[in-house]
Length: 487
Image (cartoon, rainbow, N blue to C red; front, side):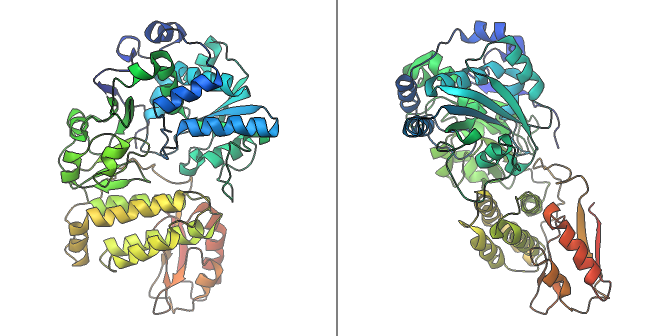
């Protein structure tokens, strides 16, 4: 797992990364020299700008920024309340580094965009959420000390977990609640930080807004496509010999990015991250870097994550590791996460080991799609289904018992462990008599197979189920169940 910010590259004209080659990190003086001055914009002007460039959120969901802005303005008027602005710079996905690049090298672009938004919605505060990995906070703190913001601006640190970056989870954390998505879906534009209408978007989105405000809609659209003007930040890792965060114009061929980062030929490319989709090498040769261009070949832009695989790793084994990780990263507050994701991880493991047909994965994914309190079950199901479809030939080899012949190298950027003390259940089959008590104690993790014997995924036990797993170990009359440190 990478622990330092990767190098930065650019294809074509730099915008977000302008000045990096000359200054490294842009302090306020360098920032103003490179980007020039910027002034406040009235709400109508900022709305028209966001609509003209069709600015969409860069955190993964791609929600139109103008619609968020309009919703907050209308909510403030309807409720006679002030607003808040929240910058989501948490970047909890281990495979993503683009926001950390902005935090560490171009923090003033993020702050410019937040200031523009705060002025437009007459906000009473700006809150910037960062992860507790200590990567971006020092640079952001230094940038705030160099300038005066239009309203009080604070930095809130959240746990570096996959779900901590979900918008509702970030608002909960800022409000002093657990850093998990709310149990029911609600719009932050109606009630967010401190109960105020809240404009919440990703760090790159605010940086793009600052660039567009300086250039204007016509010059901004000089790069990119008619449908998606401007540039895109990508995190390219995996088997690439030169992993990097790359800025390019929308519409740039994906093959050009892969060649720049010296990605080897391999069985597939992950697009969009852990909630994204795999595409075949043939699709990668045809793809363009844009939401529309990647969807056209079966992929997704998501949070701008591109992870090519080499031919020397087992693609299904890599994918199974991610599904296990995602099962352990859920909030554990709704059935599709608590029970469905461990089931999905188990199904993928069984299919990869050749012990079950692909239909078991499709069934487990269908059980969680569209049913969670947040998008985590949907994203995990999408990732798993895409893996078994793109790597169908590898799956056939695994099913026949031959296997693909490659070991799992762990190139997808997973952290070394989901928690500080990961533990997994093990079963002594010579002792187990199939009493089934363990499945009654912790049904969220242990199920009984068709023969009445316990079945559970080879993933570490999620932290919220650890107590139940310990009880299951204690009630086993044959002492067949053990909870051991996960390697």
